[in-house]
Image (cartoon, rainbow, N blue to C red):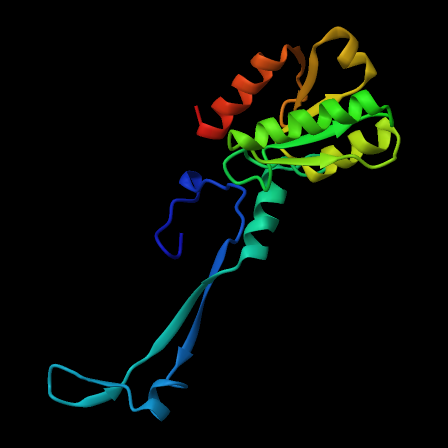
Length: 178
């Protein structure tokens, strides 16, 4: 205990660097003649420092703390989109319903990104997990026939089949942070 620290009371925890502090010294204050006068009346150059938080650093910390083996798991409060809408198959009825849901959710302030690519369900689901939006909503022939919408909660993996009003209410509550 050379510093007077009882090592039995030291707790080790995982941490992530979000910001950093670095010294600028008198590099800028001297040329700008930025000074202060001390208590004895002597003038000194200001000793400067800087504190920085970078957006890319924040995204890295979020990915490290909330991601899993499949990809990101954005917290709803900061996700680029609350919902990843996935339409399966090229059926006109599926596309029309996906368009309706997309526009309806957006009209009530729910942020949505729509994957309407001509790709397999597995590829779309894997990409949705990788991107990590809090909720994935699937529209397919199967969901149209059952009149239930499949929703997956990204961070828990829970999958539910809900009527449209239930789905919309759930997402509206999440948007408001309830």
